[in-house]
Length: 159
Image (cartoon, rainbow, N blue to C red; front, side):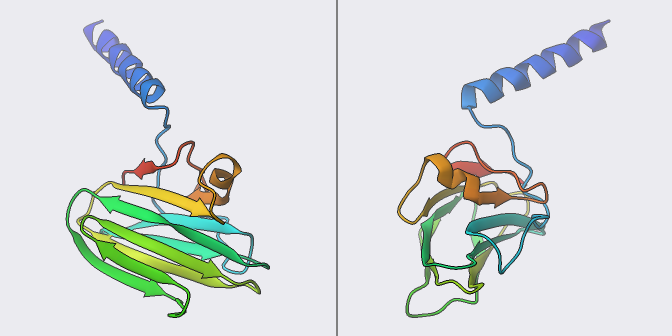
């Protein structure tokens, strides 16, 4: 009986914490199953394990700008760039944040970067797509193998 009460209490506390925070936990592990480097206007975020976070911006056609920052609570061990054009794409570290501006110019353009943190380090993302940070843009952000979209911006992911 005590065990059942303890489990019920734990479940209630998780529900209360989720309701108060307004953010449902999103599992960032694994490459999004819907990821297509030549597909839709989207920002894809996933955790590969071992401390590697991957961020990719895609567009099929048109000109789209993805910008924002990533904040980490523990030391950043590495920062890598993927298919960045030096004249328009920027990924830079500023203290405990990495700022980014990725310009996808259509025809299956792919831009992105990787962050290496200590394993298990939570990170917070703030994203703007074409200068907008709220509303429907969150429907263009896909996280983890289940392609979940955040319900707030900024949002924190825990591996």
